[in-house]
Length: 172
Image (cartoon, rainbow, N blue to C red; front, top):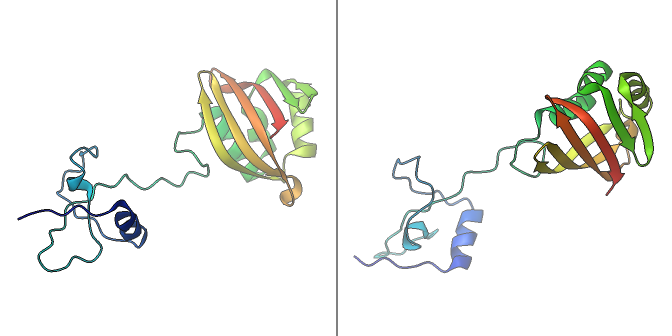
């Protein structure tokens, strides 16, 4: 029996329309195999052979655009903003942490607490992109003070011992 290759446009359309993939039960398959093994048709005609489709797993909902996990210290900051939890936000920082918010500098828990109470808690923070680095991460976020309006910014987190050592906030 001869296998027919399906044009890429038809394959894409079939996948977008929710075509169900065949499975050989090998959940450990990493997507290898020939192009014929990955081709499928949405409506086979008599005599056609439908081959298996090897799809990438669906992206996990994570609140950010990337699938890379956000550094736990940065995630603690994001979670504290979402929970409107000032104490948790401050606890995400080292006691001697430095924070720069578009040129304004804050050092230590007391200054960071005052800044967050006045400018962060009550806002809505949405992570748009996560760019991990060796000692932390940079998040592209949308921040809406008071939960409305808002702007995009880059939040560059430097992390030491699981807590934020430096945070630099700049408009994107």
